[in-house]
Every structure is written in structure tokens, then in C-alpha cells.
Length: 131
Image 1 (cartoon, one colour):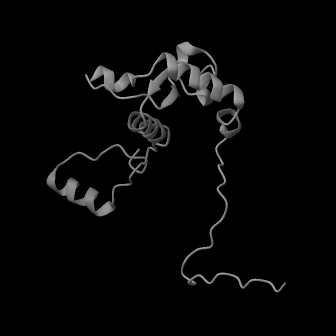
Image 2 (tube, rainbow, N blue to C red):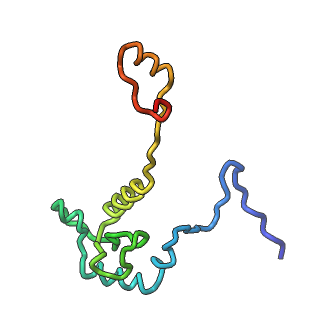
Image 3 (cartoon, rainbow, N blue to C red):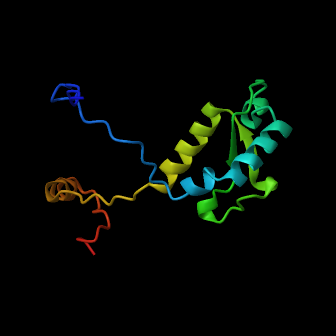
């Protein structure tokens, strides 16, 4: 039997590659023990905690670690769990990720602004160049 021709795709469309989750905890979250634990917790806590605080009744879809396991949170301790809907979980995870990636940037003040400030009698800022 002859080989079937390869399907054609436009050159500008990238080749599809299999999903590869590069997160460190993927083995933990895909484990049988975690899935069983999370399912049992969601059955006991069927309503999203954050939505309930706002007076909204919404089904929980995710078991979230209050203290992230990367930051020393207990993996299987129910006191470290909270039941959340997808939108609340994504909001919490996005904020946590953004806060861990905050960078402090030191901006160097251009010399010509120092000249203008000195001309107007404004005291210079304490920058590493002025010390």
C-alpha cells in the first residue's frame, strides 16, 4: 500500500507540537492521590469560597492551596485547601504570579534635568551619581 501524502499546511502556520507542561508540580497535580484528594474536598465543599464571600453562589471547580506548595505550603493538609471556581482561581493565581515577578527598577535621571533643577534652585536628588 503506498504512503499517504503528508497534509499540506501554509508555511506561516507553525507546526503543532504535543503539549508539554513545564511546571515543576505537574507530576504532583497529575498524581492519583492528588486527584482523589481534590475530588473528595470538592464534594465536601461544593461552593466557591471567594464567590460566597461576595454573596454569589457558584460551583467550585478547583481545589487551591492557600499557601502555595512552592512556598512551603502543605500538599495534602485540608487546612491549606480552598475550593474555588475557575475565574477566582485564575484571578488568585495571576495576582500571585505577578507579585512574585515584580522587579524594582532604578531609573537614572538624565544630566540635563539635573542642570535644569540646579538652575531653578531645586535641590538635587540623592542618586548614586550625586553621592
